[in-house]
Length: 403
Image (spheres, one colour):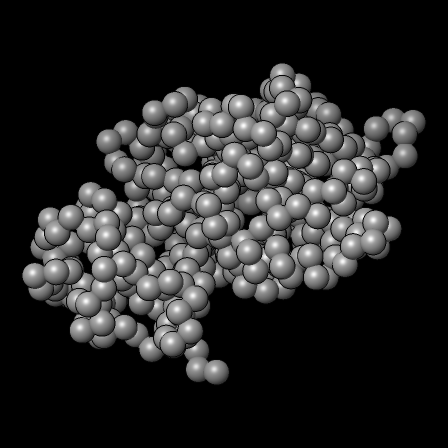
């Protein structure tokens, strides 16, 4: 099969025909007739200049296609074609246009073993509003250490405020942080992606900010000590300093907007970031939902578990949580997959439901253990994990983001 091509589209059902995109495009790739504004695939170079100014987000659609839609086809639309339109070989929605971000997301989603799909009830994400060439400027308004001073790791909760710059995000999306400076080869420092750790309406409701959960990377290498460039840059930021931010990115690892959806969240360390956003979103928007969130959260010890204190105050009617520790004195090591097996009957019942969504986020070796645990749970409860996993993936109910 030929490689799929990127194409930029405008949603005619949302577009208000304000002409902002056509006036902004430096290449003349956007044009219109009496019905629709459209993008000429033979001219567009994905410069993204037209995306941030669009007042409705109608221009914020990027797909992978076997054959680009012609102008005549686009002029005839009342709605965007379904993403699964077989006649055009449309692939999944693009997670990112930026090649750095796209490569990082593809690597993180590799553990899924198939094409990632968003939940059918997820909100429509805004994507690729800002890039390395034209980043959003965010101001640090908080940098709080989450772990004890004596802990073996330094985990931070960092709040970035965008002021009057629009930066809409959904729970589960990521942003790119661009550290200043150049690397050892004389190139600009590599962008690093971080999951958004706050709900879509900000750390406080109706604020234009977001939070990141960042672990300072300090590891031995080649007889010395290696400091992670992006993580140390972020962890050392002080309130008032500015950060260049790209994104938002991610079109599939999204939270279902359905009060009947049970959500199983499995994570270690900073993999908890998107699930903090999920939990806060459910708490704010659906406090009386009949469904529930289930959290399996692993760390070495309580002092190294992000958000350990706040987790103790969340109602059990909202969040059923299993906090799992592998380095407690006088206790055997236990990992999230071990606790999953202890909750086998509950998880098996959840897997039988068509409204259950599963999210796995954290270290890659945890992903393999989680897979094995689900296989064991299904085998011991008369279920076929391979069939269930495949169906959940096809329906946008199984998601993996590991690193």
